[in-house]
Length: 435
Image 1 (spheres, rainbow, N blue to C red):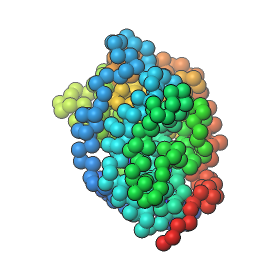
Image 2 (image 1 turned 180 degrees about the vertical axis):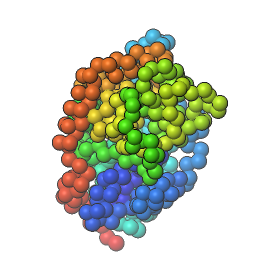
Image 3 (image 1 turned 30 degrees about the vertical axis):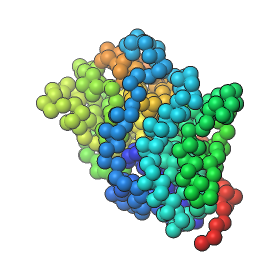
Image 4 (image 1 turned 180 degrees about the horizontal axis):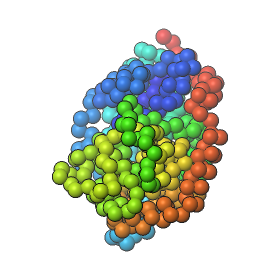
């Protein structure tokens, strides 16, 4: 069958989909990846066929900064240094309808511009995919699937925050009435669908099924109305070479500090690399910090125990580490799980992003005793991180519990193992349409 993947935003989101794309390709299916032209080179570099759609998103960072809400309505009058930590269950700001409207018009529409929807529909009508797998933010995917007759599956990169908000919106709508709460997603996507004789429904918002890479102990929204197909989170770090020193056994405990690729390329988190480095200075550990010069500032003096590298594949580095400090990104989280490494999460607070993975990951790790939530990025101090890092390194239960999560993870189906199920679901949902 023909399978079209539709990632969103940046390389990190592409890499979440890559193992499944290659599982389908090695099973004999034709695979292409449709994205804005910005990602075409990265798609080609991992051996897949790019299908550029829409215009380059050269001003995305600037546009997102301009559309960002001025303050988080969760606690608008609370000093971030004194408020309690965020939790996944609070997402929705007490008004899921308002949150969905804000997401739709100021975030979703920004990431899926009109040109991408139009171009992807045209491409799908020409190439005729049997299945479209779309990133949970790439809403051109379900529109193109409905118009072309393809089956379609949504793929989050972590917690299913979109389904969480849709569930809250449906409940609010049932209580207040459809006339009082029109669906902003229908208002946005409905005209594109009607242009081709199609219509908006909940499948457009949530997919015919959802390929779910979140471990079962990570938050899943109740009453979401979603058909989940679990898959093992399989990290992919992208093409890279490995420095020789990584293969040398460390002489003392090694800790990785990273804020991920996506934060380099996007707005960035509030956590300061300098604060992270100050927290580990003088500890009897070896620190590998994956920061570039722009992140730490030219001329910054590094602590003697810190090795600064622009990039090193975490899949090679983390097996040598006793802990990782990171922002809660999907690649860092999944790689640490795969290798049984305790995690310390310092999530960012930009937009809603913390509720789309990092908070739920931190909640789950703390509940299982395999990691800690250090602080929201705007509430971090070197003292907080230093205290928690010493705790994780000195308490052997964190390593034991992280190893237990690693063992449990091996019981989840791999991307290769879910291919037959995807074939069956595609056959059941695909619609034959005239050429």
